[in-house]
Length: 414
Ligand code: HEM
Image (cartoon, rainbow, N blue to C red; front, top):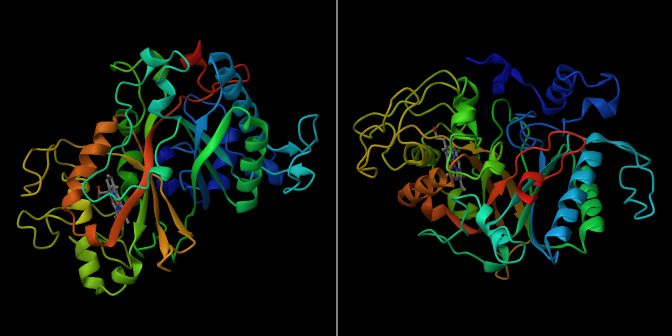
């Protein structure tokens, strides 16, 4: 077990961030409210994915953009500007007005980082004819196509660029979005956006989603075993991917609407059979002492139904080399993992007055095909009548910005 990286080692984003800053030799003044909430910006990988806070911040925004830059040089200017703003917004400090903008003023005269992370991804359309990047496209990056039960709204799909902003409070998030918008509006235009939140621990353990279940529990299978994150999440050689992608990862966003009226009429025992875990405790249906107890699939599918969510998403148990017997998964599936980091959303009702609430599902993986295969298996799950995917897209989350001279996508653009 790799304790330094364990999800359970971290009690909260702020504390974890401060400790990491200290570990890297940065000047962290523990008593300062600014230092306490800094998530380090520079690194081999972008923050907002797996680096602390491992317990994701409570507020999140996913915003997809069309790039309106007219050529490679303007595109480079866009990425340099994004880098400069993200570096500033995530580290905080005096919010000096500058010739370009007097700032939103939302955070007062001193900008508190508030655990902010800015994570930038690129969509396959960025690699079309406009910027001469076609031969540098990540090999698996394609536009998202509809799965069997999707009802996609084209206005909320795809994008040249994706910004994922996460922070402890809404004002820091909104300030960051406005700041970035003010300085980049000549070079990119927002296409769609989904604002989300994550619950606090109710009453403990992994936060709950809008179905009332602890969600993202299984992430610890990745952090608990040394090397699993590298194996399943980060792109690195040897790989068929272009060299510039090293340190990045594929990011999937799916806006998934929940039919909560229907769901909340389903008896809890049945809901648990749909997910594969107990609702109150998160303990797997096969038993255990807590939500982190090992998942075991019974060969008859009586305890853990063959088509429950977790059995189809991940047909093999942690320690087995291949999938347990399952009529819905005829082929032997080797161990696969994705890193889930979703947010819940609740927005205005539709024109029929029906609630529009659900999941801004987000996951990261080294191979996009891992997600696609999983999603195809989930077309058979018993959760299907209670959810409808309506939007999202596939992106490649860029490698990290490694230092003061570096900027987002530098290796892609030079
Ligand atoms: C959008 C609606 C979804 C909801 C409400 C949902 C909810 C849940 C819940 C409650 C769990 C059990 C706790 C946990 O391990 O986190 C879970 C597990 C999991 N879900 Fe989802 N999920 C959704 C979509 C997806 C999608 C689209 C994928 C991937 C294609 C996915 C992949 C997984 C995986 C891999 C696990 C862990 C399985 C294991 O190893 O035990 N989920 N999900």
